[in-house]
Length: 524
Image (cartoon, rainbow, N blue to C red; front, top):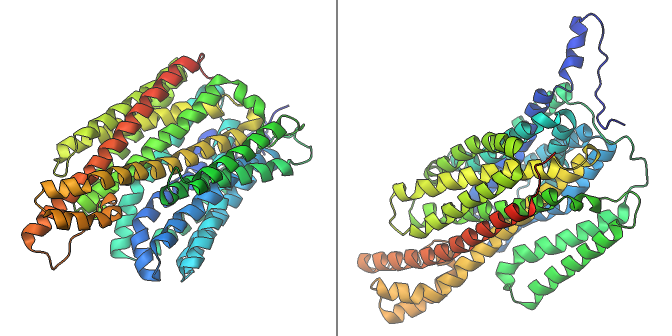
């Protein structure tokens, strides 16, 4: 039975009234429609990091409050992504995509109007939930309307939109924060959301799995949400609590146990929320793991690169965003290229190739220093953008392209969940690595830069600020001492960066080996 229901009734003789029917369900118009929602979510994810300092000043928020501005969104998103895909598969992908766009837009406006940090955090959680309805159904809709031979190219363009929106965030956010207000980084979603809703109402077909008439898997929803919440909460709090602390290990262990119980339960129900049979396909399973690694590297590296450019090098948010444009442009080129190569040669070629490029970018950053020229920066940006774009296209094809059409939304949710968990791990783990390395080298680097030993010992208390790239200087310090503290702090920060990129480089090489060894056939 076909899993895509398209509202059209072809007539022998075309007439002007046929236009809406020809328009609805057109694969390329469907791609444009879902691109609006995808762009809105991707842009929002990266502009918020630029707006956080102004949110803190404007609403008198603590550092812990600002962490929850990000974490509330991330927890709600991660917990509901597979649910969002399942709801779309069963009740209509067009319906839940548009509900997601509407709710995400309304929550964005509510954040700007909240007037308190508590309101911002609450509406960020609401925003994350509706983002979870939106994101998986973008890929589900594409899987339903594109023929298999064209799906790879569609995924390449989808990945390009995702990459560009994420990379443009720092530039757009910097301009809005500097020249308008921090609230405007959320209000900008309103016109994008209105256009997305209007265009989607005109062109999107309704697609779902018409064979799915069984009882909805409510216990599966509860188990999956609880397991993912615990795992993601443990990840985002690991840096604060300490990765080897009892609360971190206990939270992560509890989450993993609940997820194991979820997996066991799903093999024993007739209509599971996440069919375990999907993981019998090695390309899908490895694609999910590589997606997590891909965003572990991308979001983790972008996080400390922005700290380096703004806090160590002194660039404004806009200037820092402009300097990362090679990453955006490279990902734009790499996404359709990766899709075309995957279509021709299979993910076994493009996934490891993208991972190797990211490893090269990571190892290239080992040569960065406090005073590196831009000539040393842009080649790693280009390699990272090429690698991320190729892996994004290949892993999307491996996950969603290998899933049956009836499970397209669930497969999209699975990919989006891997993406979010990988990104959360990347930011948390790499920041923790940088902090640890800064703590062990700060005093020595300050002394080497000319700071008197007693003062260097005292400044060790500022290691958390130095791990963010901020030198602990004050106006009372003589100019020469200020310069020495700045130099030593910058060197300590770069020590942390070198440790982080060494880890990401090795992780990418391991991912490349896994893809070569495990992906035995090209995606169908």
